[in-house]
Length: 313
Image 1 (cartoon, rainbow, N blue to C red):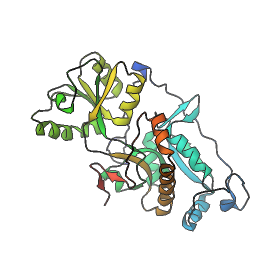
Image 2: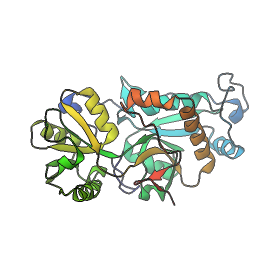
Image 3: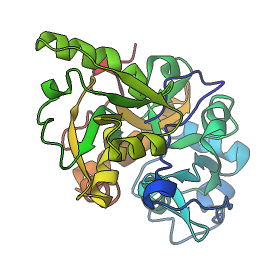
Image 4: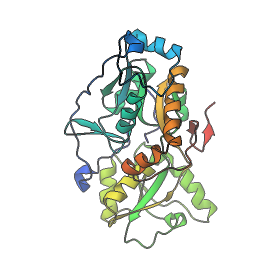
């Protein structure tokens, strides 16, 4: 879901169509509330957490005891995954966090902060988990370990609902396309170009924008024929404005987003994967995807995969 930049200087794909289209409001950063420590960490009794349904390894418990709690980092302004409403954290990942807290025998503290500080903080050990939709890329896999995917981050396109000239992917040949400068939508252009060439077409003019709000506005005004963005962001937009926009096909290789931990923290990674797998097996993940992402992913892989569904080496 995020741009493929270095860990030291990550960036975020813009979801700020709010000013132009009134989809989302931005909210001020507020700290989340903490829970009490439990008996497995501090030797005291906490009946609500003693009903843990996830087994926790001794290695992970010893790791948590050093700090006294687990710290997860989430974002403050990345709907539908994480955002604030009247100062209260909400979104897809926050619902998952609520469920995680109910099945582990230790305290989880939440740090809510801008995207730019999350991955460096996890890589340096300041936070234990980047509990947000982190695009799984070759570059990031060098410094972080990922859970199995929580969603796709494949690039797709949207067009104006009333534009009948675009019905299939091949109809994008020669069209004017909008992408975000330096983002993963930009990185998807070679994939789209190759697909169009196979079908006897060619890539048309590609306009780059600092943010997607401008691109969407130009699409409405007829200056663009289509905008490329990750499939979740486009799905939410189309759900909000179904009379204006229409979701098209994927234009790039399949890619995924998951949670991230510091490289080598296998005990924590195993726990998170066990948690996410149990949600899938119990049928709880799909309804949450439909509620927040306005799209569900029936066949997500159980292992983290790089773009093109390649295994991490």
